[in-house]
Length: 72
Figure 1 (tube, rainbow, N blue to C red):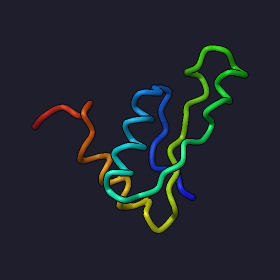
Figure 2: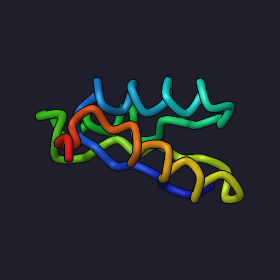
Figure 3: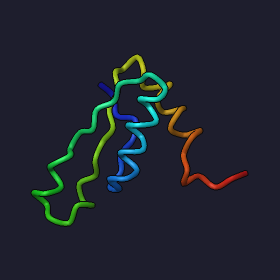
């Protein structure tokens, strides 16, 4: 498994999982509950992981479909 996204924003993490699923890439959300140990929810970001063979394509998909990326 390789990390393709790290974020403290649970909505962004959910968007990434759904976007990758739409592209046929299985992704796993790691560190989902560790933020509860810390207390604030943002100091320990969540990680989106995919199989190593899908990681490069997954990063490209997330980069090109990022709704937070400014338009050219």
